[in-house]
Length: 334
Ligand code: C5P
Image (tube, rainbow, N blue to C red):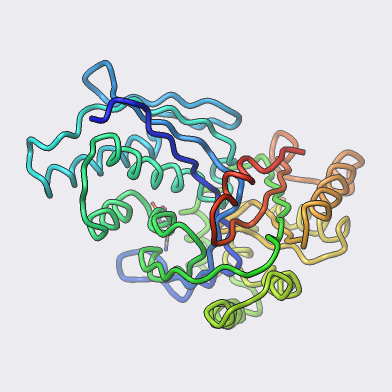
């Protein structure tokens, strides 16, 4: 053990595209998705525990039940791997984790998976345990399908059930900002995939896969931030799980319609939802849109499912290069 706390920021992710290619024999679904980190982040710190077991303290809005938290599962999986690779006597003692939540849970933003990826990294550092990248990837996949994405630390094309992650260059130029509106209704990912498998698909099924492949090609070739902003209206439709999420939570249909009317633009969905997104060229534009959404929620032009008002955040897309995540940490609550 190195002794001091190890701190990691765990960013949210946004699916710019999400194509579901089919159901696999193992029950998971084959995906083609361009995923990008967003400067709205949880903060995880890990230190040696006083007692004999790993502990987790969760603070901040929207804390879920801690017993099943992916942070504890990630630490346990990392420990198993360290002992398998380095021997049973390898240092992998109990850890005390503290998690400050800012990312809404069960929202399509992969907050729990990002926390888990941060926990794997922080635990290995706290133990001073060096295991090869393949070992880390194996740990990530055992904890959850979205965890591997966060291991690569940037924009990526994600395939398979989520474990095949190809790092691709981010766009160049000033970081676009994203408006995120998350209704206060958790949407369980398994229910959304089950609805897709049962036939909840849009009339234009197949278009998301084409848009996703096209975007991946453009990013590989080098794409400007401006070009991405122009493309955002098309990408907003490139999520095969949108009809399935609306099947699970019918109130999302009116919610999305209200957002589209209030903002006068296409509105995307991240992952299995319910978070809705719109990309803007600057923070000022995203802030103005957030204010418009707040007004429309207040006077009933936007009606959201859930027992409370939706969470409204603005945050930058995290581009390649140093500092963006730190600068954008937390985005802003509006
Ligand atoms: O891998 P993870 O535990 O995060 O996935 C949660 C659930 O989402 C799975 O149990 C499965 O029902 C569904 N899923 C899927 N196909 C994927 C990823 C997740 O069907 N590629």
